[in-house]
Amino acid sequence: MIVFGAPRRYVQGPGALAGIGKELAMLGRSAVLIADARVMDLVGATMAGSAAAAGVALAPITFGGEITYAEIARITAAIGASRPDVIIAAGGGKTIDTGKIVARDTGGAFVSVPTIASNDSPTSHIAVVYDADHRLVGVEEHRFNPDLVLVDTDVIIRAPLELLSAGVGDALVKVFEVEQCVGAGGMNVFGARSPLTALALARACYATVRENLDAAYAAHADGTPDAAFEALVEASVLMSGLAFESGGLSISHGMTRGLSAVPGVASALHGHQVAYGLLVQLELERRDAGFMQDMRAFYRSAGLPLKLVELGADQASNSTVTTIAEVSATAAHMKKFSRPITATDIAEAIQRVEAA
Image (tube, rainbow, N blue to C red):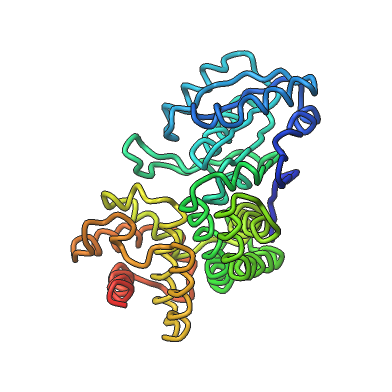
């Protein structure tokens, strides 16, 4: 059996935020906006004005900055018995993932409004929960994908290039992971086989990223969204999200378990972690030297990490490599590969990446 999941509606473009009120009115008449203080200052007034014009009551709740079970409980308690029709989460992945679980627990429709394109969390139903020290402690699921994903590229383009680079990393890895998951007969995030649609999206995502990177980065420098920038954002948020949930994951994302166990590396952006994980996966796939040379050249253009020290590690010591390998080997995604791999295999692949 195959399963394909997706948001009910996806809206992207410059100035899209000004029309959010009409979108919200299709979902209900009361809403809560979850955002940190900076994002609230950035988009709160625009969203409040648009919601009011459409007859939607909007109440703000400030996000504390880290997605923990305690923070989810605090926000849910703040909402109390009011039970709004819609929960909106605006900001980065932590805020959006928090909003998913709050919406699940309060029963409201869920709307994600990313203000950065650093990962594909906005389209998915998955939420990754950390502790106060940013150590991964759990993965939660909303019942459904978001009812609405609204992406204002006038806002996205104002975020630092490093964040867009992380989104590129998260999107880049999907075709390699989906191909491995499908080839190994692994299950996707919905616990089903991967539809051909997800594989096609993963391949389109990779092609879009490779074709539009340079022009999109130039548009970012100019501060004005153009066709290439819109394409890169769509790949990083929409294509990447649809591909990973319905296509499945493999070693690149499995590596985040071990990378998050290393001080310094644990605080690296998710997209940069999985981009490094892809280099390890490609070594395990035994890709030839020409392929790896091309990939490393693209990493340099995209601002993606090629070494552990670029992720924040003090050094790529034997103990660091061993820790990453042993913890990563326990990840369920590691089984969605063409052959069984061990911690030793992973450690040797890391050493080859570091030696290149």
